Image (tube, rainbow, N blue to C red):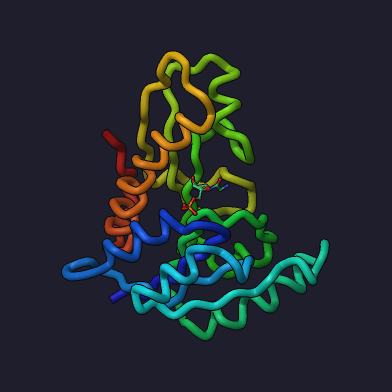
Length: 196
Ligand code: GAR
């Protein structure tokens, strides 16, 4: 059974989709939900499902990412994860941190990468006049939002869409895609999951 740690910053809806899926014949189980924000809504939701939680507030560390990560590593290493899922984790990690978990850290990003790495993905897709949008799960490498593709799901952009409307449509697909990718990845299969 693979041990999975999930890193969140907010509501944690992707984390919940992953945790709920890790049952029965799933090859992995959640061992920790960790946040950089002690007030992140996802922490209470994870605790309610019986998953251990921890938080390391990034703010006291200012720009010192290495010092923040040294604290983040403590609960993370104590949980002995085989796989780390970034699930709405909104801090950039240093190459040194990423290297430790190379090949076993996943991220979900709300665009069809390589389009729109970074922030404001839905507004950027609308501004570009794209007819489709979506989300990507990829392996985390030192370059932001650029590691090997593990899965992608597409949705149409509809007339009159706002960034919020598009984000909501994409989020539904995120909740299908990420669990499907994690199941496959935890079983040792890196073949990309392509939805629908
Ligand atoms: C999700 O849409 C996820 O793709 C995005 O943040 C949201 C988190 O929602 N992640 C990024 O933008 C990463 N750069 P959630 O907390 O409800 O899962």
